Image (cartoon, rainbow, N blue to C red):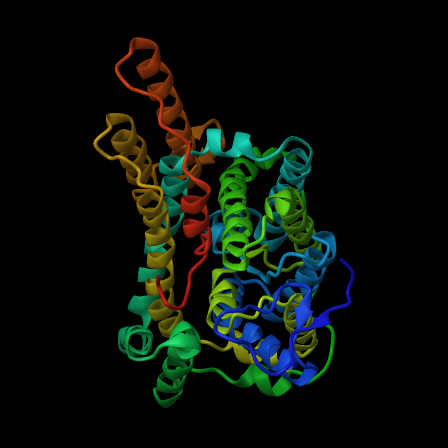
Length: 447
């Protein structure tokens, strides 16, 4: 499939019994409007990541747009997706920046991206069955959940800096989600941040000094990575993120395939490789790592338009926004209270998405191996257990991830050998697709 799109029907309407396929489009004015919707849908979560990690927002937006273009090209323009900032990196980035600043964190991002790209090549050549065997639903759900819950202290710290503004932000997110349907309901995070920002402005908590000095048009701030072989523990702390990104991308492919009625499984390797390359590129230039976004799947499901043309529009719009230092300065001025309210919801949603993986795949928690796999991993991640070996220190995310994989497979192997536990059947494609429609990133509607 090339970059040409067939016009769907009259180009103006979509019936209740049809969809606009990835290789189709509506009229260009309507396609541009849909592209703008995708920008708005991804914006709330994407700009929060650089604010929480100290990365330049404009740089993140620029590489988000470039990464989406690469994703569309590598997948042959057959898999609609937007690559926004990944929340799974926040904890290891925080640990890395305390030791070696943003350059060290960027090198960790590059390592993850390179590993993901290698996994993509393996999947493309050998298939994705081994992923399901390595990370059955109880394991993948535990990993996703512990990543979200491990971030709870960071949300608390920002919340307590300006409790009133944080409460206003969080309350707005909750009310918008429950009061409105469709696109407005899905944009509750963005609306909550805007309302919280206005409240912070009234309270005199917003610093506009950098906004006035910033140019309207210009290149964003680029930062070079710095690799340090002595920081092996830091790089190992990034490794579990690869597993979360694999789960997100595989789920995205299955979810979009189910919604469009197409078998997109052959594109799984390409999707993983594309996200890996996009993440490497972002790390080289100083942007946040990328991943597929559930918010944008929500827009497609609501509009019934799966045209990749709309994603080209969204990607180009993100690149244009990234070339405006003024917009980046406005984003950077969002105060701590607003971040505290928004991340209380977002981090919680990441954790709950892990639990949803268990529900959608009907994980049987009557089985001790499932109970202990999930329970041990979550406690290690939430309490942020730390293991030190010499000068190396390993935090709760990596220890919890290792625990989930090791506990499950050891108990499964011994249980089957002893006859005390039957092998767990693989989850159906329908179950994977149901979970895949909500990958491991925060969704504004919380579903």
